[in-house]
Image (cartoon, rainbow, N blue to C red):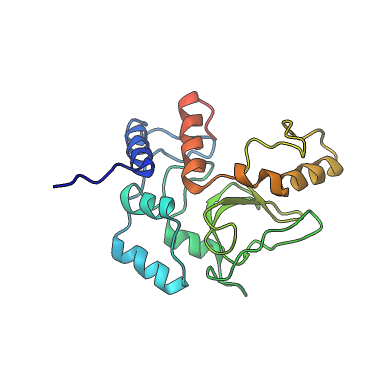
Amino acid sequence: MLVPAVTSLDQRLATLRTRLAALPAASSANWAEVSYELKPPASEAAVTAFELAHGVTLPEDYRRFVLEIADGGAGPSYGLLGLADAIAERRDGVWGLADPFEPPASCADWIDFRAPGVLPLQYDGCEYYTGLVLSGPERGHMWSYVAVPPGWLPVTPELVDADGAPYALRGSEPSDYTAWYDVMLAPWNRGRRRTFLGWYEAWVDDVYRGDGD
């Protein structure tokens, strides 16, 4: 009998499961006093029902995480929202999850919190969220919501400028933030954007380093 090849996703999920199991579930994970405890995984029937109800197919890494590891629980800030909680947090709007998310071109654009095709997965306090794009050209990438234009910004931890040099926020003036946001949205940084699993793995790395938020 042929043994199926172990994919990189298989390996990453197995490693993540082991690392999560080693975290102290009884203690708080961060300043928000969210514990390291994970909620039970969702069933295949529940995930399929969610996909059919909203006309989407979840990105593979997130779908397998929900099925094999947890449907919510431990995560950055106030923790990871499960599927049902994420929909409740998003609330009804004009656009659904099947409608394609069209990313803003610059800070001159504005995209509301209930943007088409974005499922909020993590609440960061105040009016800040991180969500997973389910439809459109950014499908599979994590985007963060800020309550100023352009609204949604790609999670891109290592930005570079047009010449390839590292780029960081250069001050605290509104113009500095506008420039920073525009670099996040620039096409040359698209390949640096994080998927769900990359985003979650980075949080676990931070926890092990002692600086997980």
